[in-house]
Image (cartoon, rainbow, N blue to C red):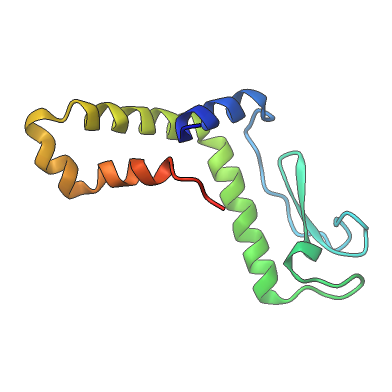
Length: 120
């Protein structure tokens, strides 16, 4: 499945935004003994970042958790714009004609190809 097909499929099924990022709560983890951050309708659990039950989370893990939460919200909230941008870029690469050199030099064609590679 192409990147754009998968994005469109997920956009249709996902909880509609806007998604917001909550503050870190030291008892918001799934077991109530680890911290968590609410992102839209989901919670990112400190245990997934190495926090042990009833322990404090490290500053590094908290910063990573906050960054992940913000990235998730950003991508969900701009999924429509990302889809439109990818569609426009695909159209440009198909019909580059005289702009062929600019398309190649910008890396647009390679970037689109990378979107469609399977990530593990």
